[in-house]
Amino acid sequence: MAGSQLGAQFAEALAAKDFDRLAELVDPAIDFKGVTPSRTWEANSADELISGVLRLWLEEEDEVEELVEVQTGSVADRERVGYLMRVRDADGPYVFEQQAYYTERDGRIDWMRVTCSGWRPV
Image (cartoon, rainbow, N blue to C red; front, side):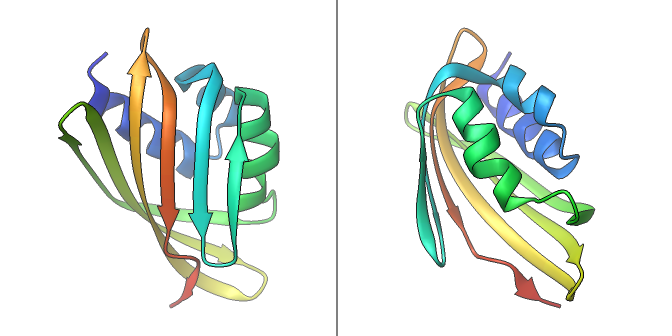
């Protein structure tokens, strides 16, 4: 699987809140770090990433209305994926963008760094 396809598949699975698919896309021992406007996040396993990060970024009651845009590319030996989502929660509609850099091993993301814009009111 080409690395850029892997990043797009990650964005699509996140937008669908398909946590089983996300677990398939990342290495069981992923090295993950993320930055959102209010804190930093770390995970050293697929389970930790899903339960301790991604399920908190998009909680059960949060509705992803649209994956607006996905851009992929590479920077030397690292792949890049950027995505913009339109979401809604009890307080109304928002958008957020994330930029991720990652490497892959055996068809799975094994190292990832993500920066998030935070949820911005529409």
